[in-house]
Picture 1: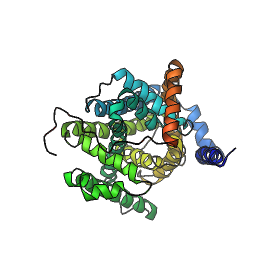
Picture 2 (picture 1 turned 30 degrees about the vertical axis):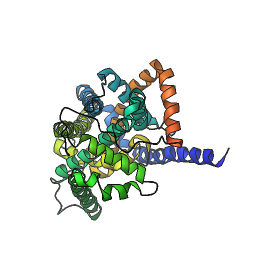
Picture 3 (picture 1 turned 45 degrees about the horizontal axis):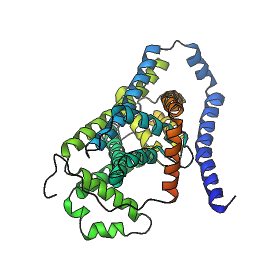
Picture 4 (picture 1 turned 135 degrees about the vertical axis):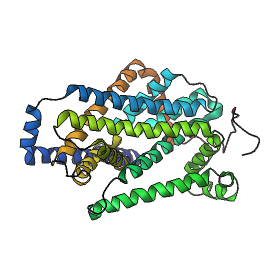
Amino acid sequence: MDRVSLKKTLLALLKFAVPAGILTYLIRDLVVNHGAELQQIQDSPKNWALLSLAFVLAMTALICTFLRWRLLVIALQMPFRITDALRLGFLGFLFNFVGAGSVGGDLFKAIFIAREYPENRAAAFATVIVDRMIGLYALLVVTSLATLAIDRSIADTAMLTVLNVIYGLTIVGGLGVIMILLPGFTRGSVSEFLRSLPKVGPKIGQVIDAVRLYRRQPLVLTLIAVMSLSIHCLFAMSCYCIACGLFSEAPSLLEHLVIVPLSMVFAALPIAPGGMGTFELAMNYLYQHVPTPPAAEGYGTIVALGYRVITILMALVGVVYYWLYRKEVGVLMHEAEEEQEHPHPEKEYVDIPTECSTANE
């Protein structure tokens, strides 16, 4: 095994070892220290209607993320069927969830669009970049707004630090959005300097190109922003339904609008595939620090594991698509791996005319 292959293998093992270690610790803590509570939950009646609603809400939110990406694609006058958006969306979710090889779901989706529209290859990658950026920033906005309900006078030092970091990231992100929407940022010396940076320059260049592509379509960006905020609220409502379906007493919906988005911010860190382990760890901590009075110990982990079961069920849809289109998926996976190892040289910017475009930016 050569050095590059060994490095990739070790990174892949580490990617799964971290979440496996976290989940093992949390589950062991539940069994050893909260066995009585687990037995009580097991013996108590479940509200299956609420648990089913939790699945429906999460699935609705996930499908909305696929439709959001489709909007970004068709906004650039690249025809894209809803059925294709759903198929690629579920496959991408599956690959992000299981960390298939070295290929993530975002790259897989971008490669598909690039194959369909090779003359607009840069635009294809831009749709995925913008979709990810909007989703992450909307998550920060929802978290910041919801955490305003937290009583800072009773929050501990660690919680205050987390809140301050979230507020800081949201403000910096907002200023960044305002700045990059100004025409002078994407054209001129600043843009050229950022593009010339070693290693990160090409990636920054793709982001700059993405901004150029969408700046002239404020209605599309507004609709997508509203969808993104709604998506994160739906995920929070899903976890709230899980808690109410399992426990006789659970934190309020408002408290879940704080706990769940904040946990998802932590899960978005590139530590584990699909936020596995990191999401559960954050939920376990926040269940003890956000609700008043604090939830019973271990409840956060149980709700997070319940949500994890739902994500596994949703990923199974991707497994079905994989089985039905395994030949096409295999070709795309090979191209995605080639793209990672030998990135295709992109043109700096291809201007795509739109109905909303104007002569000048």
